[in-house]
Length: 85
Image (cartoon, rainbow, N blue to C red; front, side, top):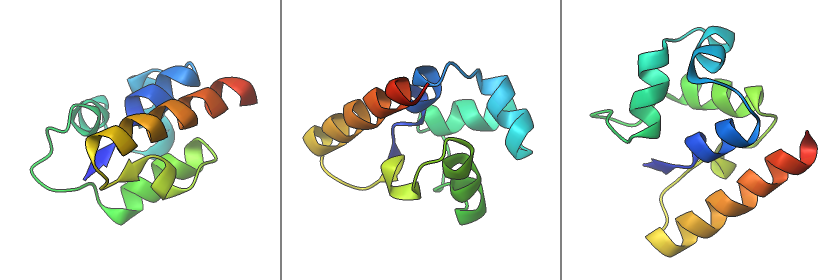
């Protein structure tokens, strides 16, 4: 599973630590998700918590498309995050 969490988080000017504290996980978990270092996909509960924190749908942050579509989606979501602030 791929994601654009880092772009969304940075677009909202939120640190890994702030996000982790807000959703009840660790900064290391957020880092691992952003760097695609988890051995499995994040749990549904964690994905929903992250999406809710940013007021987004899960599929706006987490997805399984080809690389070009992923980049387009990340850029679109990141731009929306900046506009919302």
